[in-house]
Image (tube, rainbow, N blue to C red; front, side, top):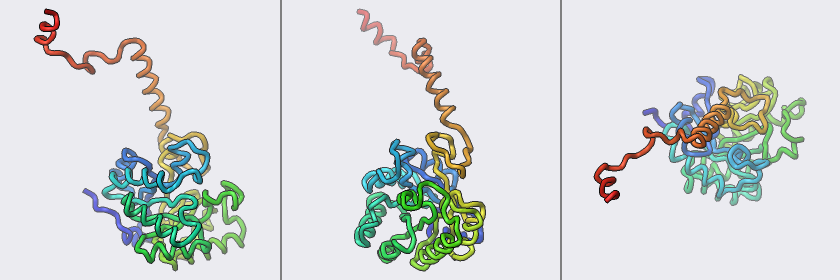
Length: 277
């Protein structure tokens, strides 16, 4: 059995090996992620769209996130499980942030939490870390505040914005974050950020020079087709395979071909004889 990934393992991977991370929102998916030996399983608030059919990530709350995180934690014996702090679960105060981060650990059994934002949320990040809870940062395109940054667009496209991104990354490192997600920023800027901090960066639409990569599971295997970002590589199209299986099942039931004897139980002959008396 593979050993469990720890926070020090993630930190020490910097400049040593590439880190792998995928979202997982339920027990079966998390089992697959864990069995394949990925370093981190992120219970992302992207489950709002990928699993619940909602329009944005702001529609989920702590109770929904904990519900899904519990299932993922039950499955993962190797992968480090990270809970995504949902919208308005940490923005209001440091006390609120610590309380909700604590809920993730106590109720859902995750190993760490992830927060979106830079210097503006440093008090919350510092408070959570002081409480003994590991924090992963998230900069660049931050979906919870997409409206403020002009929508779901590439970030840090100007020198001023790139400098601010580097400052935020350094601030999060100094606050004690063990790693940092960089989303939808130019590859060269992500490389610069990665070289300026000593904690690992995990890219999503941020080029190959980050210390690791993360994708949404449903994007990777072709189970979510409503919107496919440019940075997504679809490694399989399970949606097509599953639809073919469902259509075949429908056809066989309608034609009387399923269930057949192989998939049915036979009664004892003596019982049948007694019923006929």
